[in-house]
Length: 207
Image 1 (cartoon, rainbow, N blue to C red):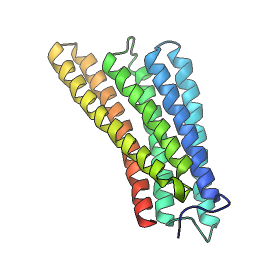
Image 2: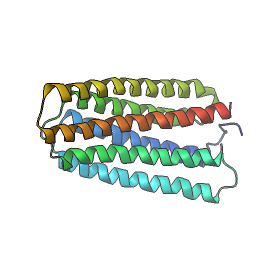
Image 3: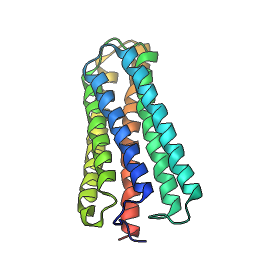
C-alpha cells in the first residue's frame, strides 16, 4: 500500500503525536543534564510524560486491533509503537539513575551525550511529521541519516568517557555508577537508531 493519503491516516496522526511527546522527553532530559538543579522535580515531571507515552502506545495498539486497513504492514506498526515506547523507557530510566545514584555533579561527556539524545529525539519528531507524505520522503531519509550520525557521535563520546573513567582514576563505587549511566545514555541513542532503521525499512518496502 502506498504511504500517504489526502486525509491523514489515524495511524500517522497517532505516531506523530507519540513522537512529539518523545521529543519533549528528550528536550527535558537534555535540560536536566545541562542545568543540573531541581533534579527530583524534573525527573518527577519526566515520569508523568513517560506515563503519557504508555497511553499513546496502548492507543496505537488498540487502533491496530480494530482496523482492517492500515497504511503499511501491521507488524511494522506494532514494532514502531514498541520502539517508541522503548525509547521513552530508556530516557526515563537514565534520568532515574541520576537520582538513584545520587549524582551531585554532571560530567562533561554525559552532558554531550544528553545533548545528542535531545537532538536525536527532535529528528525522530521530524521523521514522523514527514512520514505520511510521499513527496517529503527525502526529508524522512535526511532525518534517518541524521539520527544515525548522532548515534555514531554518541558511540565516540561513550568510548572516550569510559577511557577517561578507567584511566583518570576514581572511587570504585563512582566508577560503577558512571559506567552504568554512560551505558544507559548509549542505549538510549541506540534505541533512536533502531527506530530510525525500522522506519527506513518501511520506506523501502513501500517505495
